[in-house]
Image (cartoon, rainbow over all chains, first blue to last red; front, side, top):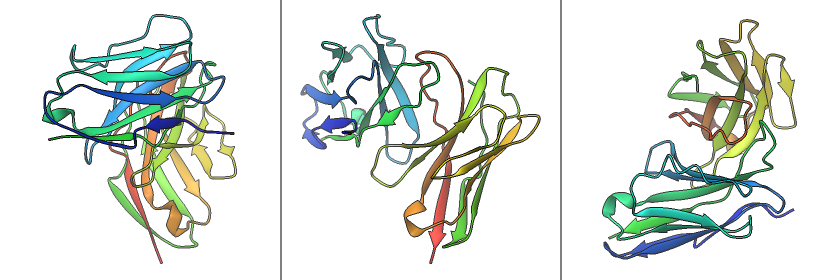
Length: 114
Length: 111
């Protein structure tokens, strides 16, 4: 079946602009995660959604970052007033939501802030 | 989550077995060992996970020591396409636990 998809694959934006990144999880997966990966670095957890529960936002680096998940499926990560340090690959993962379930990652969105 | 220690890089000859070690000396009883890999410019890919018994699937084998303080991921016949960064992660078997990725091991499979 289809895996996790993300769009756009690449996004170049000017400093100060807002951007929206989209994630389509695997159908039926109730858990959805956002991570980011700066060049040459490991993955940094951002936010987690599980079903209709309140999201775990503990990894968001600032209040310029927000995310929503509509209808328990598609998720949008929004970065307001982008800064150069926001440049990274933003990865989305979904999981069946069962205890211990492995996460399946999308290909990521490469964000470049100029 | 317990911390893991992996070598920064390793080389392996094509067609030979690649054995990637991981130390997790502070692992607790409810924590599993997961392995992921990330091929250049792609999202991480799940490989295998286990608790205390050795595990095998179509991609790899996972050998966990009896005291669970270390493990080894084995790719039985490495190919050039197995060149990637391999991440060893320990994580409790709970809802919602995000994966904490360290720097991993960069495996280079050489022709």
